[in-house]
Length: 167
Image (tube, rainbow, N blue to C red):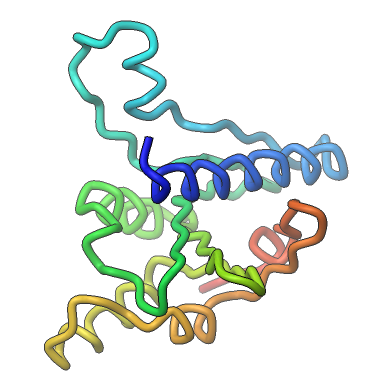
């Protein structure tokens, strides 16, 4: 596994622990699960067809469905191709159907910072930078347009994601 993959899995693991902690605080309002990805299927049988997971997590919070894709970056720019077309489409479809599609983003270089970027806001950034002939988005722009997420001892405070009402 490459260092890039390990960084992504580390962030997913932090988000998983953070969702578990949030569920403990709101046991009657929240249900969540991690969506199995390619590596999970290959562990079962390396010859299995590679399924495309729509995102990393799905959450039902207070009757509202949230689809979450985790992305992390060590550099100063986020390459737009890192969000796969099927992930983008799934996040947009959830928005269209009345739920929320989120990209949880983490800048992994110290100080580690993170945000929750709604897919509609991400698409607006993507369009703006593509119109400038760019293939990537500055990390600072993503952090500026997202909902700031506090990190403490490897856990992210995800309450602002689920408490934010959009529409």
